Length: 389
Image (cartoon, rainbow, N blue to C red):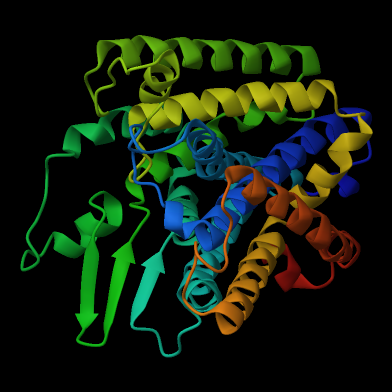
């Protein structure tokens, strides 16, 4: 939602380049995870993972990918605040969030779902991260009118409290089944005999994350001293990690218990084996704490040349998202055409290292088209629909 090229001062460029760089990093990790899901399906993992059957390298890859959704949703809320600072204020933010949220919901039902299934008309529609971001933006379009302190408290209450609802379920014939499946209880919604929806990303906790992102927006205002912002990022990141460790030691609320394994590595894997669907309190606490510390790090090294590719990816994230999905699907269809449905025997990767290498090659291949679109988006402010990508 923000573009560093439009802000003239070093202070503005520093604060916004760090946001784009972090956004770029998490979508590259997303690419890695989607390469795994496409060409490493014969080594599929559960949520949370089974540490007795998941090798450490695969566990690490999947755990790194946990950063993607929470950091991206947090930055969406933060970018919404920056949008309001740049333009007229809350009324413009409310309108933009509502319209872009609807746009993302429609995108999930159409181009995104087709990229996953290549099926038309669809028999199954998977309501995943774009859907969750879209509905969260619509919710935030209302929440922006709350006083900042109340918005912050509400967001933290949702993040911390939604696991108290884990035991609440509604049968298919209940009037609450559909809204609860959308909000919290991952499941299926039968629309007709030929079409059903899978609520892969229950949206309630993501509303808390996007609200939190908007609430920390003033840290990134033009008037905020960079050193003060960096102290706040450091403090909140470290406190968050301490809270995660303390809560995880208790082995109680909101997460499946961890236990000592046969080896120290297995014990460590068990400790960090957290639930994404829906994201538990500990999942959000760990990932957002790491995200804040990464944001701090990127701001401090924002002059480094190696950040350039990440800022490019982060300045056109939706274009990158759609492009990589279709590229992976085309590659998969070509592999099936050549070798048949024999993944793991005739095609696909036999090691996590191969997945990482393929993801790196794809990121390099996608850089030029994404850079072209990012420059187009920055140059053609007169094309209104471009800001929705």
